[in-house]
Image 1 (cartoon, helix red, strand yellow):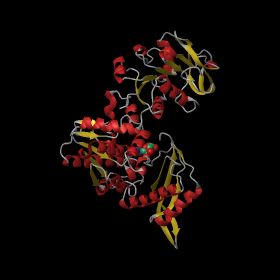
Image 2: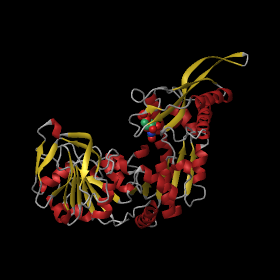
Image 3: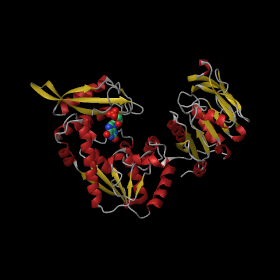
Image 4: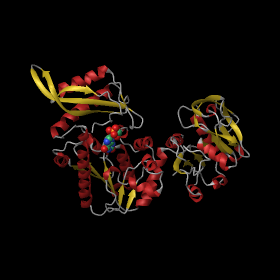
Length: 513
Ligand code: XMP
């Protein structure tokens, strides 16, 4: 693990995860931790620099989140952002007040003038846009501080005590709207903290392999491989670390896309590990027979998955560790890494917590998704696996609307493969964040050759989104849709109509069930 470590103390701001991602983009390792961290825990973390995040409170509110003031005696550089800046001013003896007039509150794009003699702003343009979001302002600076940037409404848009390496910015350098935001973060990390930026996935691979070997010793590890990015990268990393001590169980539930199961298997063919593929398609289909309601289908699949996994692992005898591909956003969302709440994420992938393992191994729990993909490339996984779109655990069963049958799955697999092929051929593979075909439960009349047909309608869906919480339908070119529709009707027996879904989320969801 790198010795350059930034500690980000979390005061509850909406951009907190973004700060962590930006610091990582600048190749510096960082962790987002609750602001309630004790001074001993902070010392044990060994930060090279500390960032205080923004937050929704006012520093003078009763019970407003705060940090242990001893943090200012560690001799470690500190950057306070928005609420973090105001808190630093208050804790060091300055004064923060609510802005009296509406014009003194700033929200959104704000022209800001920088003192480019400040170590934080060296080399910057003197004036540029920052992103502000504050109703309070620093009315009196603490001793030893001076202003380092100003806007029309705020004479303390940035403050500094360069001798102690304490800096505060009222705006948000982590959001893209702040034009020189990355430069400012870079100055803090490389200039003020004196870091070199040595956090790379090549380095992570090396240190993670070493740490895994130490932790696992000669014990054995079991991993449920789903074919998704996280579990695949987890498997590749563990196989490099402990080789044959790792056993991966890949439950092929028969609900994957065309050739997907074989591709997952092929990606691990040359690696040292025990790879068990369980072809359980018939079992899952039998369990799903007659089920129509989406939630019922999901529950059946989840329960069947656990049953198959438990049977297979029981047959292997006692294995000490269970590995999981938990990633950093899961950890942050479950409480920022505080031990009490991590458990809620132990059953990622639907595995029950208590299935008799001595310990849990989560080698990706400090990585963001884009870092996981990068690590996968480092480990030589094929690009199609590493840059794979999200694919739901219940697979095609929730893209066949209503009852699932083998015939319907066959139809959907072929139609979906054609859609993906044509997207790739048109160079539009990155044009949408997720795209797929679904098989509607509707049959309609058509005419094919000289005869009447009464066949299914396939729906095509493509969405553009940042976080999958909201999504817009992607405006795919008509000629592409035309080619896809033509090929599906001509080449996939059982389909005589193709529909394009033009619904955003909300009101729809990305998937159909
Ligand atoms: P929805 O349909 O909720 O989907 O708008 C949002 C994103 O989540 C994926 N998704 C799932 N992923 N297990 C998963 O691992 C699931 O059960 C599941 N359901 C939806 C979906 O593909 C989309 O990316």
